[in-house]
Image (cartoon, rainbow, N blue to C red; front, side):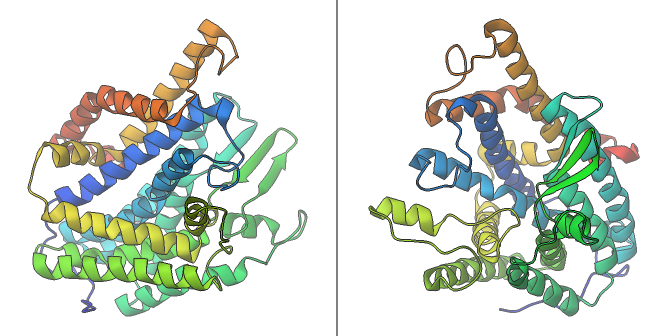
Length: 393
């Protein structure tokens, strides 16, 4: 697989304009995320402890959660890729990218601790803070702001080592009170951090593997420069996408490393569900290989597809991802509170969905309802580049 080993420099050609394929891929996974959050809001009375648990989940619930697995890896990978393009487009190369990553990284961490967490809990002051995907993207950006100064080959090697090797650390744990409990809970061991008698932090998204993913995304940035041949880029996407999926299939079949073992079930469907039941917290090697492999192939397909209304709609969602993220969280929370106010806390009797097809339908309705606001904000953001803070949304 040919690899361009040079990082963009201040003297390199300007980055291409925002590519519709990148925004469309981001928009697609945004809709998968919306599906998952509708499920968490209005399917709660049918909820199981883990929607990926083969014995407890129906195939449609399992499949819906599996689609949502693609979201975080694609978001983090595209965050790194976009940072590379931003630096090249600004003419400042790695310096401009590093400053942007620092600023936006701190912004996202602050956003997770305030507006995002409040959207989930509606508690102020909060008693529990869930450190989730926005938190981990922010911290990953802060890490990448330093790592991008490494030579590209070293950055790629480091990303591969982190993604492929962190499962060797799965057995490492530190008890509460140990000096390494808090840093390790943030880096790799999902758990609780007691801040005081009235505040607990939940490290839902351990950081370490995501640093590897964002580093690989940044290293892929030069593929998308204006000076890069589209055919060469598509060949790379095909090679790496199929390579990741092939690697996933081989490692998963051997059952020796990269995730918890799969087991043969009573039916072929149960066996397939076990085979694809990969670990997200923290994301295992096989989780990343499966989801990024799919993501790269979809990105290639979007680039090769004829321009049409479908791609434009997806790109509209993907052009304002943070705005949509905040908007949909508050809309879902307000809809839930409105239902409780009308019918009381009896979800399943008076409101809520009893089948996954209804969750899918609700997702489609909300996507249509929210699209005009997202499109309008995206257009405003593109038109008012003089407003500096808009670039963070």
